[in-house]
Length: 184
Image (cartoon, rainbow, N blue to C red; front, side, top):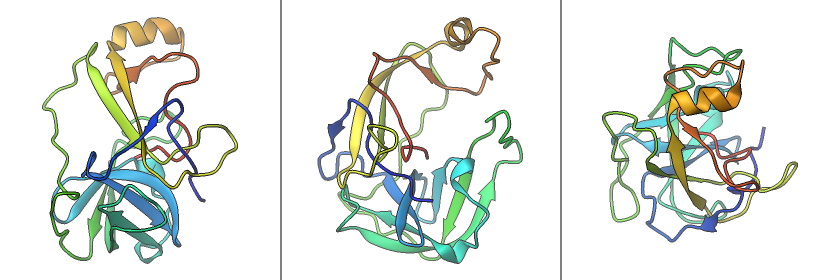
């Protein structure tokens, strides 16, 4: 269940560059990323929750390295979106409630959220996903700057595969983007 590696075509993140980024670990191994919503809740992808007991999970804040640093928090419970559909990959969002309050500081902050999705704007993705498949996780958090596209443009590119209105689409150069382990 280990997620693996690095953003494809990305660059290493500096300590504190993404203070909202967390590593979600299952039985000690990085599985997915997530973002700090507030002092007790983490936002991640629903597909990152495998149906294992909450006690199997830990959330690590405040470090760009998987091997060291940061603070580990236990998981009290999960709240998966009622719209989550694994067949259609829609409603792919979940919340993780921690067993203790997060201590905020320079390298640990809630994510600033936008009130709406705007196509054709700059976005940044960060994570510990693989650069090749199969591959292994880099120790250091990676990031890449992306451009979002409108869902209409995304639908044109996907042809008959439906694009949900809740989707966020990006198109990148070949050899760049997200990979296994970047979810969340």
